[in-house]
Length: 476
Image 1 (tube, rainbow, N blue to C red):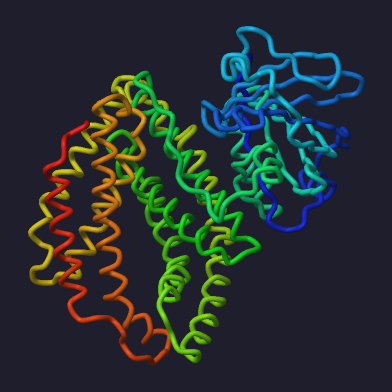
Image 2 (cartoon, rainbow, N blue to C red; image 1 turned 180 degrees about the vertical axis):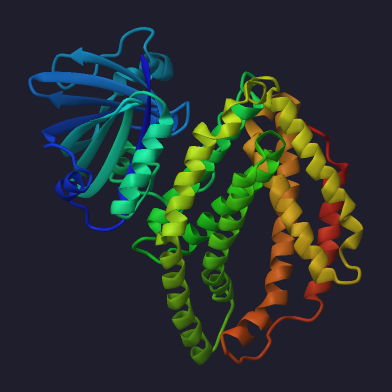
């Protein structure tokens, strides 16, 4: 078993590996054609557990590889062995055998990936990095999916060198941080994705420290954003746009939560840049919310035209150099930032203790804002309250697996449900308040169809939900 540090980059524009070779001043690449067959059970059990099992033909050899992403998308555990033929060998005690149990007998081919690979070894006194350009075609069910990846794998040295090379490549050709494995991309042929990728439960355990939790949480937020960003490349997908904004908010919340152990100038800059990026996506999201209401033909046409412009603007921002470098900067910071070298920061405090303190702080802060709802300046108070609710909800979700047993799990689920209800009520209130302003900004005149008293009802519901949260059982 080995753990590899690997950074993937996704080209934004049509990409020429030979041209990059010349720009970097490299010698000729080693050329290979690789054929890999990926396996899983009919219910995709391995994928659900975060494993990928493949058999790749390399010359006359067949190499079976199992990959697991327990260390995050940049550090994957890997097990390799030679096998005879193109059917997997499941040995007792292996990760696959332990994960699947008796269902290992149902393993079957899921998809195939044929890769034309160019490989260079870039070496200096500090590090050896294998740079690979893969032109891939995944096939399954008589469908195909082409894609291109750049992979930078650290062979010797520190991960800092990999990020330095990634920046050098980024100055020569536009690339984005890659978060998906080949198996993740190809699996879409047999498991078509839903409209958007939602946040996942993060696999934290009692053994994780606060620093390790920070690394896993920020990496998962990056994956959440990049997956939805890619879905928006070719489609004005309202669900993906919403989840991309949620991912950015989760990232900002995570940076606030972990400020006690990872504060610094970098965090403040990240917060500003993430806020800017979220704002660039905001107009498109606002229009999507407006379109849920009934409009006359003229207003509807104006809204759809405005939506097209807003999505083009959002896509331009996501493809910008600032946004591309921001994601790479965040990845470098969370993996090799100065804060990670503070031994006591990473090891001294357990993630569960840190989580309890963070949740309790936000819970108290939320309770302190209850009386502001419905008073003077209600809209401003609600806006501030919504921000606290989102931070609290995301924080509970980040650490959910640390409170996932027995009564704690039940209490956590009830608490989250109350938070979600409160967030929805206040979100609807905010949409109604902001609707006239947005219509005016868009130059759209229409009759106000909102029913009188809706705002009063929303605030009454919000007060009730707040009391439920205050009276809920503590799970932390």
